[in-house]
Figure: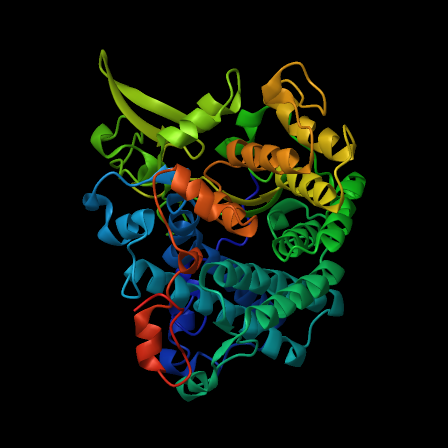
Amino acid sequence: MKKYIFYISAAAALGLTGCSKDFIELAPVSQNNVVNFYKTAADMKIAVNAAYGALQYSGQYFSAMHEIAEVRSDNTGILDVQTGLNVVEIDIFTNQSSNTLLNNMWNDHYRGIQQCNIVIDRIDAINMDAATRDRYVGEVKFLRALMYFNMVRTFGDLPLVIKEIRNPEEGYAYTREPVDAVYAQIIADLKEAEAKLPAIYTGTEIGRATSGAAKSLLGKVYLTRKDFTAAAAKLKEVIDGTATSKYMLLSNYEDIFKVTNENHRESIFDVQFKKGGTGEGSPFTNQFAPRSSGVIVSKVGPGLGYNIPTQDMEDAYETGDLRKDLSMANGYMNGASFVASKYIKKYLDVPFQANDADNNWPVLRYADVLLMYAEALNELGYVADGPAFDYLNQIRTRAGLQPKTAVNAEPSLQIADQAAFRLAIEQERRVELAFENHRWFDLVRTDRAIAVMAAHGISIQPYQLLYPIPQSQIDINPEMIKQNPGYQ
């Protein structure tokens, strides 16, 4: 049963607006509401909740993340400019620094980072329970690390803001810091979060960041940095800790995405959404339903035709893979007629109103951990039919597929060496984690993006592995913020 926690709308983004009529009247917005806020433990809980709420922004998981991580890849695409020229440009690699979607992503991530920094900078002055204080710091350190991780993989070097900016002039002091410095901060934040966060929550607290979420994200960071020894060790901690964390693979792949089953035992960290006309609902049912379908697929509100599965994506599934029909469809019935129009099925719900459904967004789940661990083990040394095979085949078995082995009479099931195992992991991650914002980042991380996109029919240059810095950010601070090479 889904547990609803801490749903704080964008209106609770402190320093922007208030969280109730009384709160709004306490002090002018321009004063960041500091006159009468950040005084109590209850105030600080609202501030922490606002940091979680930032994940719902359009420049984060509401829309930008699937556009820059799925549409960019060979998994999905955009059929026409009615969906939005900015998204089409990202799909076909023609985007430049004027792309407003990228500007929204930049702004909304730094808004979220500011909300984390507010908590970190102000919480020590609050008279409150020390254990709760530690937990709140752990939560926002996890959130800040996640936001910076998404940003550094997208833009490269970044302004590294780790304290609250209390007046606009302070912002002009920040230049872009090297990727290594950004990752060092991400790792430091996640280590602290891991130490401060509980393994599980109960009741209305379910859905908050846990120590397992911090470990899992840290493992992914190490894997991205090609520190395979550290990645394997950290991911093994997650696997070995399941007696406490309760993580497991659900037996039925479909159950992962049911809105009646959210925050289940395979979920490590989700962005929480709740429908009901409060501004907390998710848009994915409407966004991903075919534009031509009206309300046939989405039920309430029209389909918008975003994030459309490609033919390459359909072809990636092996015959008999149970995940295919649960993840995507080739079309829908309009009366007695079948309309061929691919769409994603993982995020279907009956919305309360258009763009207001109950679907959470899965950021980290246990299947991802198992596949990352298998990848790290293989990078440390291929072992024929060794432990890496076991973790890979756990995922395949649930999908109704035959295991892959080092020697196999069926060529498609044989993994004879380290290079072949890399491709097997790439394939399994693609179909297991389809439409969950992993594909583009996986291709870049494994140095496979250029080759894979060429096979998909799109020739890209190395500079396009990063996105351009939004021109508006350069215009604001041209002395400190410079453009990525290759972009105008």
